[in-house]
Length: 321
Image 1 (cartoon, rainbow, N blue to C red):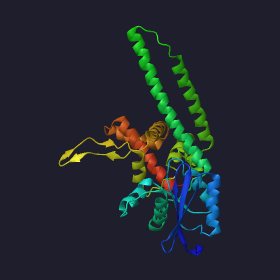
Image 2: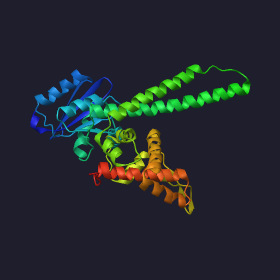
Image 3: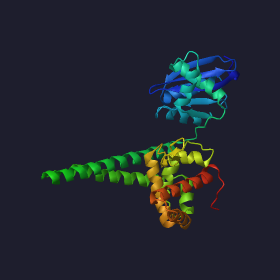
Image 4: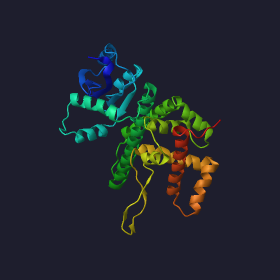
């Protein structure tokens, strides 16, 4: 094998194994496999090193739950420029293929080819710390959802007991709710203590937002690139979705796509901004004076904060210095 001709790498990930392909300039490929663990990934990196594979070539890994994370981290640490892509991209290339076949070997080669055909794939920039923070933030969202469900269920049981004249012992449910609340508090402390520097800067520079809330938002947005503010707003589900047909125009609503916990955090932040930040409060009041519902005004405040966030984090056109 002429190692100087390796032009791209594709790594297909499953729970227990990896299939990796090194694609050469003549479009031939060498495909190998290894275990999806530290020893297996070390052996794959040793293969790359043995054949002097340039760390500057595209290295494409398909996002597969959490199974790709260790591989992406270790390959990045080895100096390679890793691109983690959505499985939908791979699916599009599979459908465009004449044979439309799929197995681990074929997928690894396909990923390597995507690396050559798609020069603007998003770089994998996550660290162990940022991934841990993202996991904790996601857990807070799930626990908060469980807590709300348990509270609603407990309330229904109490009302049913009164209605039917039956005493229902709900002590274990109430203890479960308390336990969840304590765990959420612990996670919130972790998020505050491990907030990225941008979250600290924003919470210090913008009155009305907490370091923990901004850290949650940035963690949920971590790994995503936005070319304009409208795409960021759409990602959060706060963009307006209107239904039209001919001259008929339906009621406008927010699209609500994406993570509902994300929107809950944004609404809470919008309330804090409306209460404690003069600029955002004035913006809120102007909309109220135009007859807008308070909920619509809060959404507008949240969108305004997202536009600021885009300018500060992605466009870097705002500074607190």
